Each structure stands twice: as structure tokens, then as C-alpha cells.
Image (cartoon, rainbow, N blue to C red; front, side, top):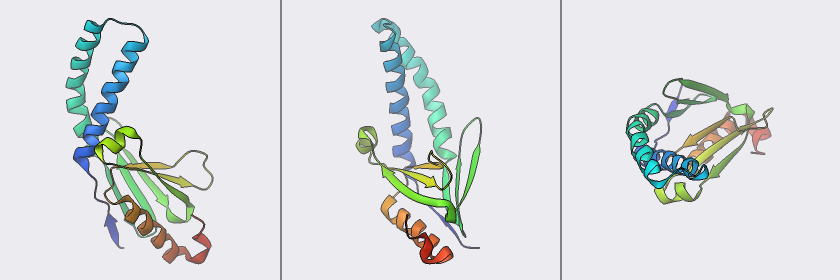
Length: 150
């Protein structure tokens, strides 16, 4: 069975997640009106956790095509292993918010039939347009013309 692993920009994803966690923390502290000194202290204490957690999170990312299945691994405390049959994929949406744009990464939202939410989000895949086309081409090869609506 042919396996194609997707290359991930791990450094950029790690920096993105660290910044995102810091901004969320500072926003949370600011929302509740806690003083600037307390915010500064909490920011650096949480940064110690972030310096451990983000690399762990990024190292556990793995995305690949295996035959007629898209597979995704992620997680730190709880490991997630997703298997998405290509025939269920209805759309692949490329998304890039302002913070992602700053770090030069994209998120690929995999949407499937029978689900209102996206089935998986693939962060930091290099050359996301090519990967999207690869997935859709593999889907078309396996399932024929009926899958061209994605």
C-alpha cells in the first residue's frame, strides 16, 4: 500500500501556537481587569509551560495518505489518530488568519459528508495547494468521476 507523508513546517507551527497561547492568556487577563504586573508574571510563568508543551504538540503531528485513507496524528496528553476515508471528503478548505499569515503557514480544514463540523484540521503543511490537489486526485483515482464535486 502506497504511503505519502506530508511535510510540516514544524518551526512555524510551534511559533504560531506559542504566540496564540500567549495572546489568549493576555486577552483573558485583560478581560478580567487584572493588573499589568500580575499579567506580566502570569505571562512568563505560562511561557515556561508553553516552551515545553508546544514542541511536544508539534512533534506529535503527522499527516499522510495511505491508500484510500487520509490519516492524521496529533495530541500531547491525549493522542488522536484520525482515519478519514477519501470517499467521505466533500471539501478541503485552506485557511490562513492574520497570525498564521505572519508565520507563513496555512490550515487545511477537511470536511466530510455527514458532519456539520470539519473532520480534521491539518496545520502547517508545506505547499498546501499541492497537497489539496494530491488528495483530490487520489480520491478521483480511487472513486472515479463521482467525487469531482469537492
